[in-house]
Amino acid sequence: MSSEHELESKDLIAVIGERELVIGYRLLGINDTFLVSKDNNEAIKTIEMLFSSHKFAMIIASHFIRDSLPPLFKLKVEASLRPLVLFMPSLSGNMHEESLSSLAKRVLGINI
Image (tube, rainbow, N blue to C red; front, side, top):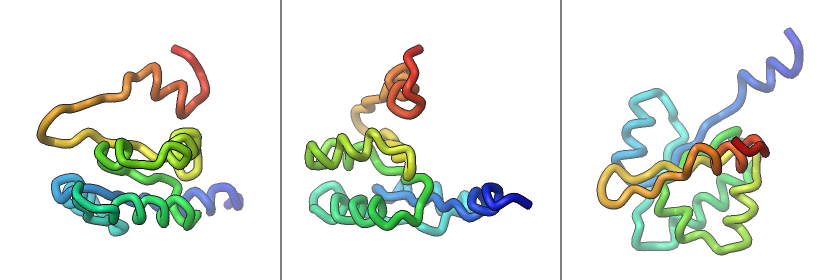
């Protein structure tokens, strides 16, 4: 077994967001979940901690967190491949989805 394969088997996923998002991923077996609300700075502190921990390969976060990030940190998060940060739209209210072409450009560095 190669060391690259061993690293991949230890990659972890973290989920941060509102109750509906977190519970869904807990049901899928993801243990590193963090429940935060929209009306405080806990979400920003938590995503900054997760991002800088270098423990996770992917962070799935509620879309409302993206809107509240400080501009420089938001640019850093959007440019990062490890951890890859994906923002999921809320299950209720207005959904602002990132287009497939902008997601491909951000994650893969290619234009579609």
